[in-house]
Image 1: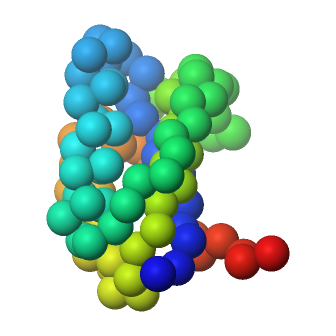
Image 2: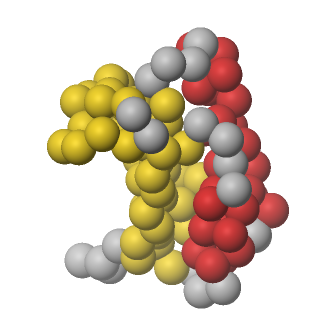
Length: 96
């Protein structure tokens, strides 16, 4: 099992419960890919460096998880088509 981090930038114009549902859906995709979520960091609403889909703010979430090497591709495939996710990035974390 490798350690990964999924960063999500979620639409700031949606309701709190809808935003929580987006994060829960991402966590569900991780568990479906045989991964285990270890931590979810909510960085809150931040100003974006540039406008994305005519929005200048977004909510930032960082999800740490352990998963096999095949999981990131599956997760990215699912997150790419999610509504209200402006940007995402899945990276492998160093073991150090």
